[in-house]
Structure formats: C-alpha cells, structure tokens
Amino acid sequence: MSFTSFEFAVFLAALFAAYYVAPPKHRWSLLLLGSLVFYWFSGFIIYVLATVVSTYGFSRLLEVKRSRWIAALWLVLHIGLLAAVKVPFFGLLMPLGISFYTFQSAGYILDVYRKKTAVERSPAKLALFVSFFPQLIQGPISRHGDLTKTLYSPNKLSSDNIAFGLRRILWGVFKKLVIADRLIAAVTLMSGDPEAFRGGYALLNILFYAVVLYADFTGGIDIAIGAARLFGVTVTENFNKPFTARSIAEYWRRWHITMGSWFRDYLFYPLSVGKPMRRFSRLSRKLLGNGFGKRLPVYIATIITWFATGLWHGASPNFIAWGLANGMVIILSQECQPLYKRFHARFAFGGSWWYHGFTVARTFILMGAIRSFDIYGGVGTTFRAVGSIFTPWRFPSLDLGVGGADGLVALLGVLLLVIAGRERPRRWFFALHPAGRLMLCLLLLCCILVFGVYGYGYDAGQFIYTRF
Amino acid sequence: MDKLLSILSGLHPDIDFNSHDDLIGGGVLDSFDIVTIVADIDEAYGAAIPAEEIVPENFHSAAALFALIERLR
Image (tube, rainbow over all chains, first blue to last red; front, top):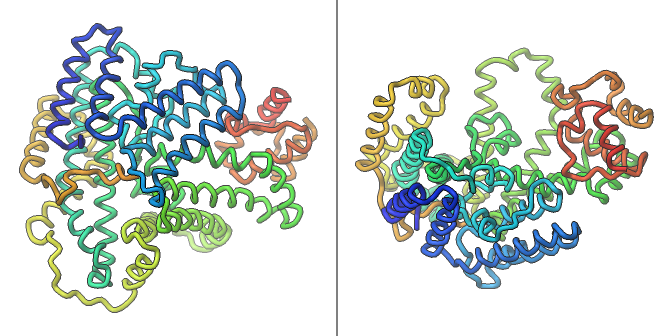
C-alpha cells in the first residue's frame, strides 16, 4: 500500500476515526491493528512477526541476565537475515522495509543492553514499536526511548496535531507526485542508456537525480511524520536542509539523520573505543607520532562504518563503492584541514557570502558525483558516465519527456521547495490567519490534483527508499 | 586525577584543564582526542569507557571525566 495511493488515504481515515472513537486506554492497540493491516497489504508479514517475537524474547532475557552474548546473538541472527535477503545469490525476495525495522529493533536491543531504555514487558506494545506503520517501510529509524514517549499514550484529538499532520502529508505528496514522479522518468531513461546520454546529459541526470531523491525521500518522510502526528505520535525528524551543508560530513548530519546517528552510536563509537582500537591507538601513536597516529584509528573506524553503510543500502559493488567514496572524502577533507587553515589565514574571504555559497555548491557537486554510484548501478558505468562530463558536450536532440510544460512545472515545484525551506516565508506562513493557511493548503491540494503524475510506469508511486 | 591531567595536557599543552569546563562545546576536544583519551585512560587506570558513555557531559571537563573513571572502576 503506497503512501500516495487512494487505498492509503482510505486506510488512514478509517484508522483515524477508529482511534479517536476507541476508549483512550486502548487507543495504542488500534495503531498495532492498523500496522498489521497496513503490512498485510504491503509485504511479507512473517518477517516482521519473527522480528517481534525474537526481539521480545531476547530483550526479556537481557532483563534477567545482562550478557553481551545475548545481544550479540540477536545481532548475528537478524543482521544475518538482513544480509541473506540482500545478497542476490540466495535468491530470496527482500521483504519491504526489513532494513528499517531490523535496525530499529537492533537499536532497541542495544539500548536495553546498555540500560538506556526500559524493557517493554507487553509483547503487543513491542510489536507496535517494531511495526508502527508510518515508519515501517522507509524510516525514520526511531529510538525506543524517543518513540514510546507518545506511541502508547492515550493521545487526545487535537486540532494542532491534525493541522500539522495534514499539512505535512500534503507537502510530502506534493514533493512526491508533482516533482519526484515528474522527473524520475527522465532519470530512468538517461541512466538506462549512459552511452547515448553522455556529457551534458550525464550532468543533467545527476542534477535531476539529486532533485528526485530529495523530493521522493523527504516527501515520504513528511508523509510518515504527518501520518504519525494525526494519532498524536511524534516521530523524529530525518532531514535538516541537507543541501545547505558545507561539507560531506555536515551533509550526513542533515540527510537521513536517523540512519547516520544509528551507525554513529551503534557502530562507529563502539568500534572507535573498543578494546582492539584502544590498543591500536596506543600502537599507532607510538609508530606514527601524535599527529597522524592519533587520527588513524578514527579513520579506520570511519572507513568500516561507511563500508557497512554502503552494504546497508545494497550488497553490491556500486553501493560498497558509494560508501567507501563517502568515507574517503570525509577523511581527505579532514587531512586537508591544516591546508584550509593556512589558506584562510592568508586570504580573508572565509566569512564572505560568496565563499559560503562556494562551499555549499562544492558539497552539492561532490555528493552528486558520489550519488552517481547509486544512479548508474555498475562501478565501471558510473566512472564512464561521470568521466563523459569532462569530454566535449554534444546535445543530440533526445526526448527526455520533461520538455515544455512538464519542465516548467518541475522547475516551479523546485522553486517552491527552496522558498518553503527559508526562514522568512515560513514565519510569514505561520503568522497568517488559520483561514489563510487553510486556503494555501487547499491551493496546494489543487496543484497536486492538477499537476501530480499518477502511476509512472509499472511501479506506480513506489518510493525509492523502500528498496533499501 | 594527576595522571588524567597529564594525559589531557599531553594532547593540548596550552589548555588549563583544571579550570576549563566546556571542552566539547568550546571545541577543545575533537573525536580524535576522545579516542586517544579513551585509549590512554584504559592504560593508566584500567578503566574501559564503553561507547554509550561517549557523551558530551562526560567530556566537558577533567572533573567530569575523572568522575566517569571513578564510576567505571
């Protein structure tokens, strides 16, 4: 059941009515029922149920005996299962959203082991935490301590929550149907034939994909956060203006935040301060001195973390290359810090608006280049396509399907995204009379109905991130 | 506490770790320093700082870090 389908709207409305009609004490159980119904129509429910049963059992065991082996066994079983469905060799179909609910459950198990969250004694409540439908198939990846603040509470009908929820859903649907689905056909076309669409077209493809991925993924997350809020549940934000980042490291603190912080807390930190790394840190400083010798252990942890992040996206060479490229650029930019410092000491434009703009553009371009591993699939194809940008451009007239009116609508849509992301227009919007805000939202709804692209190709309305 | 102060001054000789109480927010310690400090504390005190204790509150000041070591030992 896609978030942008008519079925989802009906499902959401029915669940909304049932939730607020039910006695407050039992409201959370309707969310569980709704989540099971949602997943029943979306994927293989057996994997979610197995995750619930095993996570419940292991967390109760950890409550009795806090042993690292129990936590490790859970990780081996579930990360192993995740790997098995991701590696094409085994020929298993990948259950929808398994990367997301596996990671959310892993975070819970590790938090229980670390005594950072309370053990959930009700199996049904834990089932709701694992399977909560808005975030089941493409995140955000919530922490148990955060999500459960509002997930089980007898949330009351509130006009603020409804307004917030509907606004976010509407905004997400706009991004997805008007912008992402309008441009994705062109991206698919250009990525499918990199020999024909080379040079300037390859650059255009990378630019289009940045817009498509942003509109698609943040749109899906908007709908998830909005849908949860309709039931009074607050889900952690997953984005914070990623395209304003001035470095790759900063980009990853702004893009898919809940995945980045998951890898930081549950992989990067444990790797960096674990016993082997503590020993290695002392050895490395002895051999290489207090400069590079001090940085090397962190770099090794960085590379391993990015390797794993690549694998999480897909067990294929292109995603491993994608992960390693991210890690390498972050390390390289760290190693260049002394150079930057000397440069800025010499030239005083470090604080100027145009230098700021330059660093933002540089990050956008670099991320575009790294992302092309995802666009083109194969590592060799990626290098050839990106390389072709630096050869003489020829523009044979090839139909991208986004000429004329379509191109204009996409462009205006992107313009609206940029405006809505800025502080002043936001303040203006929220200072409006509620009736004025409602009018603007209805206008947006009209735009979606008129300009939305319905049912692109055979994979109608599918979100990009649901494949991870 | 003396051993800890010597570990810290080894990294940043120009900082007075007796009085500084904003080592993270003030940008004195970065992630490289944290990993180094954790490795040296392990050697000096036999205290292994686990990943979940890598939070700013534990690294704000030498005193906070020492309290963490005492707690772990």
